[in-house]
Image 1: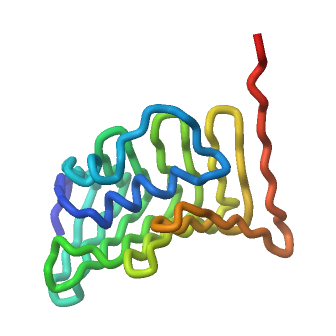
Image 2: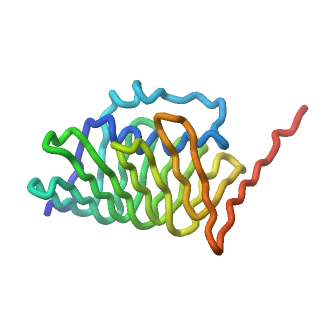
Length: 173
């Protein structure tokens, strides 16, 4: 365990976790965006109160006020677990748990849990009434799933929570 450790990973998979979830088609804007390719070249810095690395188990677990940054993207959570392959730069899955908040420009996603599965090419926000906001616009549901390669999302409701989207039209001058 390493306390107060700043960990840098240069991986395309984490880039997709941080970038792609925020480009939910229903809420995307014409704001200036850095492409996934451009962003994948930027370093990722992860800060936390503690890091536990398990080379045999192929995991790195960051706990306590976790902040991961790459360019203009930030993910905050209580715990961030990275599952990697034999080649440590190949990330297979990233789990963010507890008070998850992902921020880019005027877009913010909230959930209790976010899961990025690089093999399936999807990000799933769940727990704690997942919500994505962009400016005053919001979308909520029980689960928000974003398919990275297909540039599409599915928001599902549940027995207690229906999908709800609020769009505030821009006023015309």
